[in-house]
Amino acid sequence: MGDEPASCVGYTNTTFVMNSLVALPEGQGADMNGDGKIDNSFGPLADLLNPTLNGAVKDGGNILLFDMFLGEKPSVAFFRAIDANAKLDDNLTGDGEFLVPSEQFDVSCKPTSMFENARWENGRLVAKSEQWAFVIPHLGSIEFTRAGLDLEVAQDRSGYMGLFTGTWTTCGLTNIGFGSGTSFLDVLVNNFELAPDIDMDGDGLERVVGDGTRVIECVDAQNNVIAKGSDCGCHPEMADGYSVAFDGTGVPATIVGTY
Image (cartoon, rainbow, N blue to C red; front, side):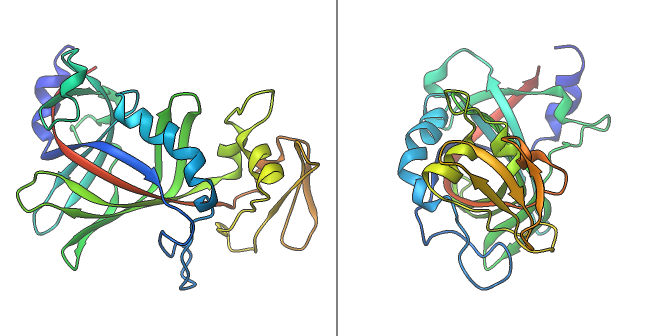
């Protein structure tokens, strides 16, 4: 592992490994666009998503760490980790030891995946990040923009519980295959008739049009066609996305090195 573990592992503060992550049902979540209403467009899909989503966390296929400084001016860093000792049965017990990617530290050993504007609000740890990404087996790389967390951290540092939110862009959904040559966006638009609900660029909500099976075109708020084809969700003018909300919990963990 070279010199990096010795120089960067000492950075870490109070570390937790996520031991559950479930999509919240319709009507639960947070106001992500400031209109005073709960945003969670994926709520109707919670029962469909949760076996895969939470299963990936429970079986060790997706090891997500949050390293927190819990002082008066808190900080939160996020790591995608691997097991350090080949003892998978201790990962979620509070005794798990993990390695994190060396590229997630800069040359001064500051994590490159810091959540921004971390602060205490009514005893809860609140923070935001422009990007939050991880991998879910059978789905692929999941990337949220304007991610947020709102957590209650146990006073004895025995764990956390709380809310994770974000926006899943049309391009991110286009890039996730869903079998038979279709994308996750194809399924959302044609099978569930879900539309983007977060206006990321302030020009009104864009729409995605399907033919019953595939995405065929993307249009702007004025109904002008932005692009045609099943990959139109990745056109530069398609900035909007779908709100998502998760409930998550975590238990203590130790970062012992990098890989």
